[in-house]
Amino acid sequence: MPVLSTPGFQLQPSAEQVPLSTNYITNFNFLNQYLPDTYEKEFERYGNRTVASFLRMVGAEMPSNSDLIKWAEQGRLHTKYTNCATSAAAGSDSATITVNDANVTAIAIRPGQTVFISDNTTGLSNKGIVTSVNTTTDTFVVAYYEGPGQTFAITATVSVWIYGSEFKKGTVGMVGSLEAEDEIFQNSPIIIKDKYAVSGSDMAQIGWVEVTTENGATGYLWYLKSEHETRLRFEDYLETAMIEAVPAESGSGAANAALNPNFGNKGSEGIFYVVNNRGNVWGGGNPTTLADFDTIISRLDKQGSIEENVIFVNRDFSFDIDDMLATLNGFNGTGVAQSASFGLFDNDTDMALNLGFSGFRRGYDFYKSDWKYLNDPTMRGGLPTAATATGTVTGLLVPAGSTTVYDQILGKNAKRPFLHVRYRATEAEDRRYKTWITGSAGGAQTSDLDAMEVNFLSERCVCTLGANNFVLFRYGS
Image 1 (cartoon, helix red, strand yellow):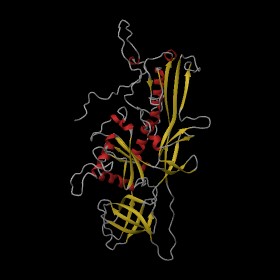
Image 2 (tube, rainbow, N blue to C red):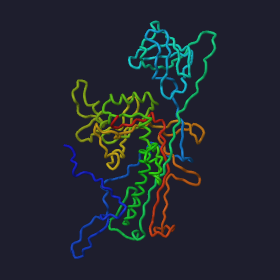
Image 3 (tube, rainbow, N blue to C red):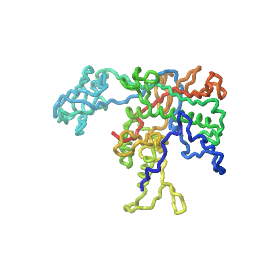
Image 4 (cartoon, rainbow, N blue to C red):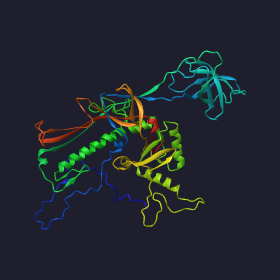
């Protein structure tokens, strides 16, 4: 029976910019001779309400002295072109091959090299030796080794990759040399702010409800609760901003200084944005079978082949993985269903049956971890998960360990976690997590304002290194 929509979970914010009537006693009728029996301590009905923890688990924080963070990532070692055309008809002994791949400034093929040429549609292939190259037109002439000549039609789109070279005795060496190319990526930190304010009079008002927050602060002063919740909310935003941030596109309202004169107008590249654009995307919601994961593994083989990976998932994805792994142990060799026997060995009626899995190995090690951010209904947990939904994220595969990149600040190669945060800092100013109090209440004596204002500020961005090793699971192609 499905869970009914009424009654459901509340999404009405508990924080407002004005005092809430529910926070104060409004009935002072002393003519009533009966007093209510009250619970003084506030009940924590939603448990731990914070969603931050993801970046603390998989990343690190490092200082930066610049408005711009740049790093270089290695390109492929071997050369392959996948959008090439031939000038010759089937049966020809030689052909002129034109490389039409995007972003190619000068082809890396040289005379004397041996190449493998394959039709992208039929798989028909030839092997040949390069006799001449024109880097201006991105073309080269190849002489085929096979007697019947070219196996594919003149209209075919082919792929070309180099597998070696061949020279005659007593000839000169290879013509020309190849220069290594790095891919340069960058990100820009954004300034995140928040503030909590309370008047001096309200600070002197005691409440009847004992309040508490996730970080252990308790007391009968309501402003303490509001201040601590502002702090916790700000700490959550420090993480969710790094996950969700997007750069302001040219011509957008955010980038238009006339429409947006007082606030940030550049944006930043968050994790989801980077993986959507430079990583791997599973667009079918949740992979639920081994065949689905085999497709993902096949893609990882074509990337960095990182041995250990962590999949941060929402609850549905977590159960789908459990169910997939459970079915592998649910039948005997004759196809007859057996009782569940996974999780704990030698299960009996008096033992708790563990129906979940923390990870599995199939080609690579995959560890599963629930991600509260994807389950919280006030965040991404409230997005549609139907097959027709588009853009709803259900999980993120993050490679474990670190990678080597060229650090522009250090001027040398350095090991960095695949995910890490860079914050602005120098000897004189540290903007990782700033907080200060202004006003004339609560111990502050900075102005004649009869209030205490607690200010929060951070300037940071996230660096997603080796995005080609990440996999984003979402709905929609």
